[in-house]
Structure formats: C-alpha cells, structure tokens
Image (cartoon, rainbow, N blue to C red):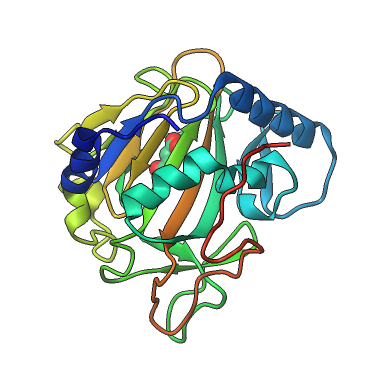
Length: 254
Ligand SMILES: O=C(O)CCC(=O)C(=O)O
C-alpha cells in the first residue's frame, strides 16, 4: 500500500482532510472505469442509478452493486488506509458514484455531509430518501469519527470540478444551521486537487464545495463512506449493507 506519512496523518487529524496519491494503480482504475462503462451500457431499472446527458450521473448504494463497483469498498489498499485514518475497525456507511461532465455539470456551495444512510429514519426526523435509501441528517457530532474517501478515476482539479475544502471546519457540525453556504461565502478555501488513482480522505463534517467543470472530459469520483464499527446513531442504526462488519479486506477487483 502506498504509505501514509506521519505528516499526512497529522494533517488529516488537524485539518480534517488529506490527499493520498496512487492508492489505486492504473490497472485498478481501468477495471473500475470498465465496470462503469458496462453498467452504463445495460438498460436496467434501478432507482439508485440516475442518468443524464447520456451518462450515469449518480449511483447511490454502490455497496449494493455487483463486481468491482462494490468490491472497491473492501479493496485492501483502501481499507488499510481508512483503518489508519479512523484508528479503529471500520464499517461501510455508504458509497456513491458522481460523474460530472459538460452535459451534466454542477456547483455546490459550502456544506458538510452530515447525512448518513440508515436502516430507518428515526421518529420525528424529516423523511429523506436518496436513490431509494433512507438518510438521517445528524444534528451533533455523531459522525465526528467517520471518514469519507473520494477515489478519483479522472483528474479532479481546478477546471475539472474538483473539491474545495475549508480546513479545520470539521470540529463542529455546521449542518443543522444550514447557513454554511452564506456564512463562509467569502472564503474560497483550499482546492484538494486529485490525480486519477488518488484518494481524498476527509471527515464528512468538513465543509466542502465544488465548481462546475470547464475542461472537456468526465470527472468520475467514487465517494466511499466509512465509520467506526461502534458508531452510534440516535434512535436508529446505519443502513444494513450486505458487507461484513467490521469490514474485512479483499485483494482483487474482478
Ligand atoms: O463531487 C462533487 O462535485 C460535489 C460532491 C459533494 O459536495 C458531496 O458529495 O457532498
């Protein structure tokens, strides 16, 4: 596994994010791109697969897919990196593909990812279904120990819709107030540029934003979500993904 240096680990803990290069080698990136091409070519009726501009734009519930698209969540180089960052045995809490391209382009202002796929929405919480899956938006620091991992299959940088982050903003949950977009509008933050095969790992409560891509091509990101295996949510449980808990690693994408 490409090493995570002590400086990178420290940066992750202090700033709430780190970019690690070459987590996936070229062969693994090609396998994942081919799996997406194959899924795109199939005419399937799946509420979690959202199409637009002739492409699959979003897949919610990657752990429910067959083959490499779900195996990548258990792929050893990814799992070993995530266990080091979480400093604990981990569970999968979600997985989404985001394919930004000129025909289906978007920008989003500052926000945290304080939502998590759950088995059932707790009593009194708003109904929130994404790609057919229930999501609970946490109000406190329940997700402080979680780690998201954005694996890039294409460049994700300045002109290709990369992610901008606000270092150290993960120390509180800015979600419930819902005003992060205007409150931090004057701060451009830091671009966490990615090369194909790299992983941008960050605390989901870290404020992040994205701009439209202006370059030609696509920006495919596998946004994998993990939490400590002993994560506790008020009045509910994490979604029951069909993967081992705590998560065990596999050595091949096939
Ligand atoms: O990938 C992007 O362009 C933005 C994604 C994002 O903001 C999110 O996943 O919360």
